[in-house]
Length: 98
Image (cartoon, rainbow, N blue to C red; front, side, top):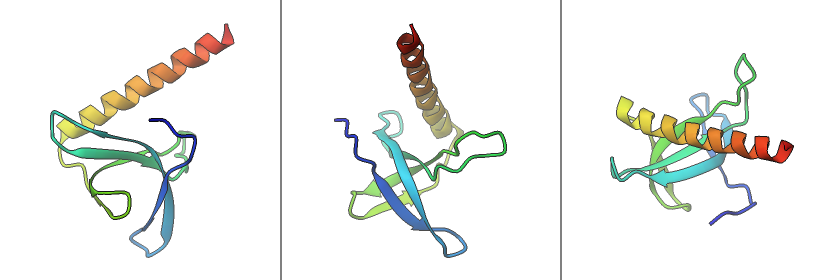
């Protein structure tokens, strides 16, 4: 189900400063059996690209625990999904220009 409402969460970083992140999407991988969350703080890198982060998670919206991605296989799954989303976005942008 799609919602126009922004989903956000806050986490204290290693300096104790609370940072707000926007959830881009979540998914569960049949391959790994884990749940993943992809999110951003909407900051950019030196090249102007929006920084995107990913973690595994357990729990629910009320009490979620984030954990680090452990394997290259997991990163490949996430990269593939991000690439598919970017391609779909580019297709939609190209179609709207016609």
